[in-house]
Image 1 (cartoon, each protein chain N blue to C red):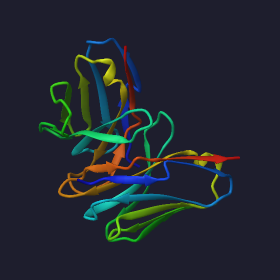
Image 2 (cartoon, one colour; image 1 turned 90 degrees about the vertical axis):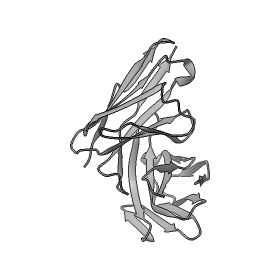
Image 3 (spheres, rainbow over the protein chains, first blue to last red; image 1 turned 180 degrees about the vertical axis):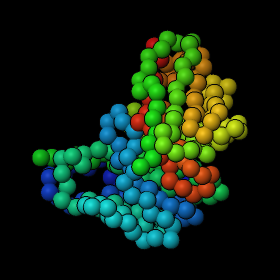
Length: 112
Length: 116
């Protein structure tokens, strides 16, 4: 059974810092991995999707990497801003269906 | 981009009543729709997967007679919480996919259900 874990559970950084969020999964047989952002009481915003054949994806100040063999992904946020404050979720899709298994999330607070 | 809406965005109902939540894909046809629930400070848990015109497939531990899912068209799926109890209070989020294969899911904004 696939399990997805995110470390740290919460993170507080001053504005301008670069930061890394971690995601690990137990079953390396995945189709893809996605990073989402969730603001309080809101739905999910997809940030980046990495196919299993890819190593990384970049969008603006965000860079996500994937090491399938070791079951790890990282989300790198450059030059953090207070507007980046949210919960970040990673999710993996694998097996015969396109079910997404979500991680536990990292609550990020960027202090102005 | 693909847009998914949910209605209502929040609802309060009394214990024992039923409540229906709608999930619509506004600008694409969704072959598959998914329903998730999220408890406070917890992650999303998949409840069920529905394909248009077929019965939904429920995850282990989810009561299919309590959470009725209908996916009658390629743009609409509904989740009905029957005989709601306070422990059903949660944030319900749907997502839609254009294919049953490995394609991106597009998420709705969620529905906050409070059962009193």
